[in-house]
Image (cartoon, rainbow, N blue to C red):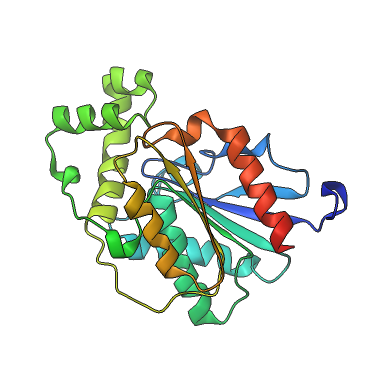
Length: 239
């Protein structure tokens, strides 16, 4: 097996979860092997693109992400990583990559998201503010200091509602499996069930891995080092 310092460089494009931004996966970066370069993708209405209008459709968000990725693909090996909404965006970007005839990623890492065939519609983006904030607190993804400050809630609530609306109004269309290895990460106490996560195996014809971690929906925040090991091991196999 090739040593990390001799392995070909690989770009790991990380797609945000609901309310996330281009820096959401920064804690993962410090644990990755040296040859894997993390690149966070920024969505409209937050971070460096805070002045742009929010998007309320998962397909529109995927179009935006693909427009950012397209000029970068084909230069060197790459992989995609997405948690929750980011996993769905990875899947939709794969479809756009295939349609454009661009090189596939070596691996796609899908975390904290049910497969399209096991998708269940919800309407949490329509909850009144207090109930919406309580739901966010239960999910555990928002820092408590944000949910405790009215001004911060005022800023983040429209972003989160737009993202939840995008996810919850998505209508997945059945399609043939893609020739890309999928690595699925799942939290044992997540609202996404083990069966819903395992259903991602139907979406690939090129290999499937499944890894479980202790924790609920945002289990990733407690397991960056282990997740980096999973990413490194998967890329060592595909190299």
